[in-house]
Length: 312
Image (cartoon, rainbow, N blue to C red; front, side, top):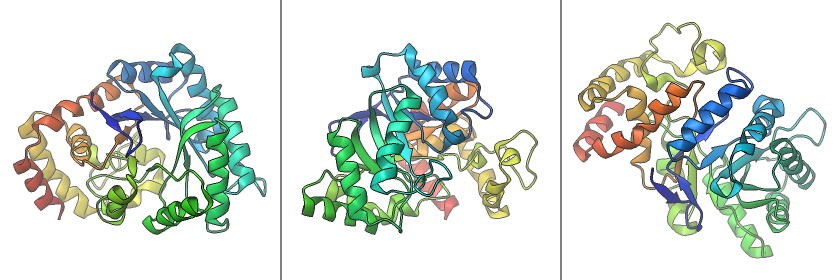
């Protein structure tokens, strides 16, 4: 496992990380969560991702129980604040919700602090200056070490940096964008100027495009699959993608790996990616995903050019 610096910060995160979206509190119970986290940790993963919105808080509760088995210093734990409930101040990036939401997450996780704290989405109803002040307050209070954004535009991230410099506050360190073979614009185009300008780190999510890049889907969604349980994601499965998947699979076969492993390894080849967040509902899926580290070294420049020709 390679440990990459989170942008220009001194923090090192495992190139592959493990996230709890959809599975914790859904298909995974307490025993399954502990087993999957242990398999990831034994493979070298030190970064585990969560959010107050996942499972309505259940995901943090379950992870909090599992974390008792580890030395805190060996882990990098993140959570994300935005959707915290149905009350008028339980959603968004106001000073009130960010501070109260963070304390609520810490209580569920049974932690004194998280290493990374994300603003889970942009909030057009709250001034960015208020959000920056709140995150600065949280960092200086010791409730988190670094703060960042998730699915923010490059312009909003730049504004946050400008505001932070103006008021003497701590700026965001990282962004958590979606990134995979089919969703590339944010990481490869929009955020590009910020990598050098601010030393922005990225912890990318959905490397398998909600399971599509495992190669197990065609136009018919199999029962028991992620797209079966989450029909709102089915719009991503288009005939055009299915055709490309067939061509991509031939490359994976030539490398002696699965489609999933190649898709994750492809993300790792991007030097601006600090960590790729993986997910799994079974230990064997965790182990399969971790093998992507080896596949990364097998992907030559010729392979990357061939993959690019298919994707475009």
